[in-house]
Image 1 (cartoon, rainbow, N blue to C red):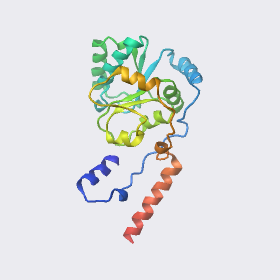
Image 2 (tube, one colour):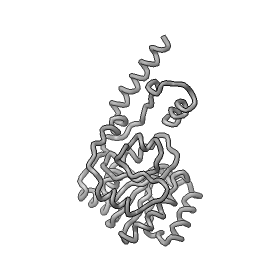
Image 3 (cartoon, rainbow, N blue to C red):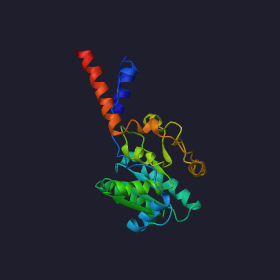
Image 4 (cartoon, rainbow, N blue to C red):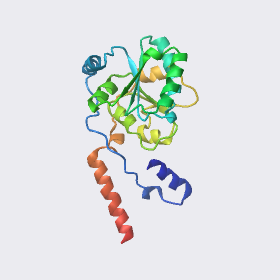
Length: 225
């Protein structure tokens, strides 16, 4: 829906205020929790005790996980025991999985990449609350719920500099441009400001989404009748 909005704005003389995007809905369980309790949960369920970074979303080539692997290698020079958790609804893209495993083997990080699928909301909430940061370097997205779920848990976000993510996060994310600088990223993560995410989260709460849909319907119906 977001990309359709951009298409109409770019190709037609339409007032931006007359194009409405009805965002999806995230669960109210995605929120900041106690970091220590999250670490206990992760240790007991996944046997992970070391620091880790996270990607969560569609397991697809557009996500550019190989770029994230290169950053991960640089980070491991500073944090030797660091792990990289890759969360996905499924890992059925075997061609891409084999490609990533080949890359991780060449980079000598195979044992530090952990693939997890079919996770519960509770699993993801605890992982997001305990990770060093969430990373997604995708260059094309429509509506990405996973990154918003992480953000709602007060997780530092490292992402590509695309319009959708800028609309989501404003100044509360580290935007990848030409080169990944792990020193700048670590500075961003460790100095991450406590933020008020209402400007993002209000788009994704179920009651707000419903109200938004009704407003769109009412305006549309008035134009018809």
